Image (tube, rainbow, N blue to C red; front, side):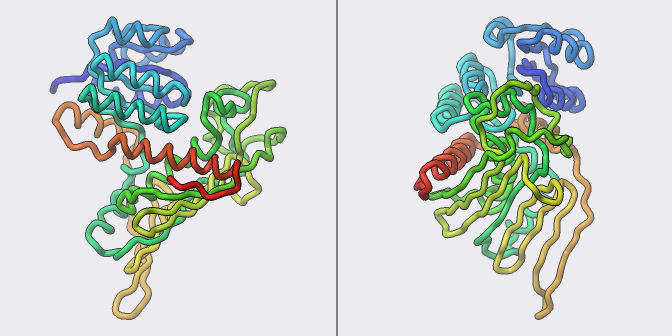
Length: 353
């Protein structure tokens, strides 16, 4: 099978996940690695694709290598300029979430993809876990009825990533747990609901743990490089409410640090025939009624790696013309939601989209 020539940009925590996926899938060959710390790129090259070249400037890599696609796993503020540059130079683009740090930046990515006629896909790994696929199919078959309300969240007790580094610096990250974790669960909820269009949001954000020195209890806090004297000007808790054009609504809650019992992520959907409780990449429950009796369904499911499955879908779209299950407008809508929640938190008012 023909293998795609891929250039990988950003070899930090998520960059390793992406590289391992490319190696495992065998659908692509990473022919060039790019990172501002060359040692990281060299280490990744030596471990996974020994023949690849190493660059410190992504522009030089894209201009010199005959690439089919680039894979971006850099700090958030770099997603849009890197993706746009790659698209303008004839490359398909796969990018780590979030799509961008502003609506304008996300729109530039969408416009560049459409103009170039190339595929732009942003990581939505939670769509590919077995419980997510099960839930989507159950709803599509009409077994849940009308999905009219939902809740989702990702709560951590103490799990601030890269404290003092780019994760907690708004200019580089775009925000805290709302933009970091919210993309995951909000997308999963909206996708399962049939991608209704958001029309209004309201929200609150809080920064209460910038000076907290407790040890982390979350494996996910290992992402990013902490800086003891760095910046922490983003929220550590966000809560909000989203209304959609079909009358449905979605409550949200995301925290890096909060005095709760334990870390958990969840999506709950309420339908007229059945409801869902998505609890992890392997666990879901369905609540319904049969013959006048309330019934619960707990399917036994085991997922493959969601990141790997997402990247496989991206490459399948390029190689085989498969219809993408993510389109850039979904990314623009996501960033509209997140930015509007931040605006609502600042103004104390509901924001119309």
